[in-house]
Image (cartoon, rainbow, N blue to C red; front, side, top):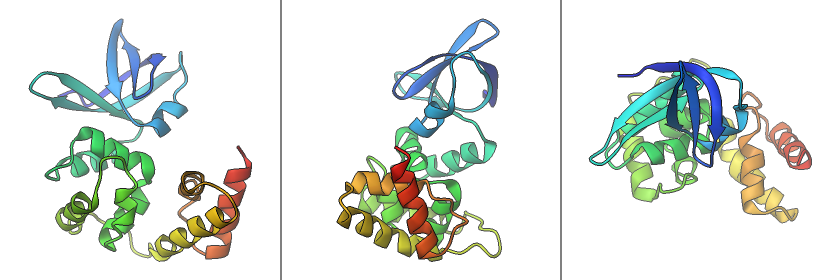
Amino acid sequence: MIYFINGKIYLKEKDFFIINANCIGFKIFTHKKILDSLKIGNEYLIFTYFHLKENAVELYGFLEEKELSFFEILNSVSGVGPKSALSILEKNDIKTLSLAIKNNKIEFLTRASGIGQKTAERIILELKNKINIEQGESAAHLDSDADIIEALTNLGYSKQQAKEAVLKVDSKIQSFEERFKQALKNLNKK
């Protein structure tokens, strides 16, 4: 219905922002990573998903079309609503999510708030054959990330800090050592 909105950010809150497009303020829900990247007063092109509920009309927004597409795919799974789909996208980048779904890595889905074991299994079952992965992409780092999180918690960081640091590691980095070094750098930037 509304594919995108172009305008200036008027206000940011915990889970939504207001964008002023031609003197109309649109309330758009999104996840923390996108909210953190938006600057009040700057102009953005926001790709939107229109969600009609029994008692509300909501817009969900993304900076990239591919994230909107992945959101729509996640939202199509029985038991996954827009808020859960947002939570999944906040915790993982699209490439990692695609690899995790293709390789039955439930733990990457259960990181998200509101996604339990059964819902994660349903997501994998329903989406495994719908998601395309480019040739040459490897899931090797998916297994090592759990080891990196454990190593960081052994060094005294909280599990949440360790997870956030690992999520910020570039998915192109494949070796355990390089991923671990980058996660440590991410922790020391704070």
